[in-house]
Amino acid sequence: MIRSPLRAGLALACALSLTSCGGGDGEFYLSGVVYGINKGDLVLTNNGGSDKKITAAGTFYFDDLVDADSNYNIEVKSVPDNIASIADCKVTGGRGKATFNISSIVVSCTINTHELGGTVTGLAGSTSTQPLVLLNGSDRVEVTPAALPPDTLPASVSQPVKFAKVPEDGKYGITILQQPTDRRCEVANGIGTMLKADITNVQVTCTPIVPLV
Amino acid sequence: MLKKSFLIRSVATLAVAAALASCGGGSNYTIGGVVYGLQPNSALILTTNGMEVSVEQKGQADSSGNVPAVSYSFPKQLEYGEVYNVLPKVASTAADGTVTYQQPAHQTCAASGRISDTAGRLSVISADYTCALVAPTIGGVVKGLVTGSVVLSNGSDATTTIAAAATPTTPPADIPYTLGAVVYGKTYGVTVTSSPAGYRCTVVNAVGTMGDNAVGNIDVTCVPNPP
Figure 1 (cartoon, rainbow over the protein chains, first blue to last red):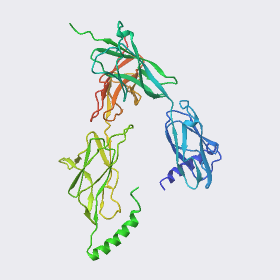
Figure 2: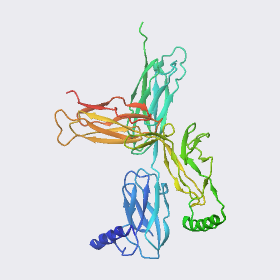
Figure 3: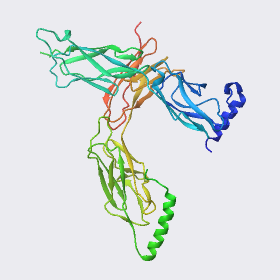
Figure 4: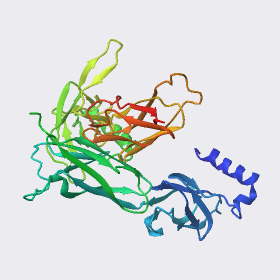
């Protein structure tokens, strides 16, 4: 009942523009929800045709209506370029017989993720009881100082730092929540957009705080 | 899963009740339910019909942060036909009648089952509540934005674009913004992902760990680049 205005709307859209409805002069609509995409194009097909291009997560409707009692089979034809393969978009509730309007199709996609990390220099040998704490939003990373070999300056010791993976085309922004008491650290290359390659050049440089004499 | 065919049962119960009434018998009903999402070492105090029960989470969260569901029941049973209404303990009542309920520390619990009914109408009484950690918003104002837009991010969790007014006043008005919600106890760190061409924007109070209240002092100031 609730859906009838929508159906009428679809029917009207079809009536006004028969070309866009192709051969789909059936009775019932096919619809569902897409999760896990942040750009286009996700292309879905029904029985290998009726291509439906989707550019954003949310509810979708196939343009073609299907005949009563016809079988439908929803498959993924192509995925946005930040999703590795068609297998990374899973369809559930995509097959059945259309005996009423279908709104239970779920397509769940997983966007590629890439490493976010780099190096911390100058922290080695820090004796601060409060560690250096780096953030990428809610991702919190405590950096334990590396050991300082004899006759070595802290500035010449680098140690790796790694954050949780970041989705492709997502932003990242690294900040310092807490400084060690005996170093002053700064972040370079800490802000950007994750593209197709891992980010490994985040540079955190710490310099000793010289106590006032 | 506990809510099955109320209607049939209601009719059956009525019939039984009528029969019982005629022979002077009475059924008793235990009022209880399940509290979901209650954090370790916290308690939700529920009340009904003059009774009070403290629902305590004694379990621990698993590696994904999920906590066990906690079952509870009130100490005394109700008789058939008594009306129950399971509510958190009242913390205060304002002059205009607005009631504030006690909540477990850093959480908000809301009814997720049938918390009010007549004893005996349902075969199983499950007055459920679901709790979640509070998630206040973070934000502030953008100052000095006269052209283009500034993009702010909270790590990889949230991002927002703030555009200059179409016809900025002189001096430009502060533009308030929010950058999503942050769950209690989680960190946030706001960075300027991009500044308008010819300007450099900086953030103050950019980092912190979320408490019980919204954070509104993460202010951004944009100034023209030096010539």
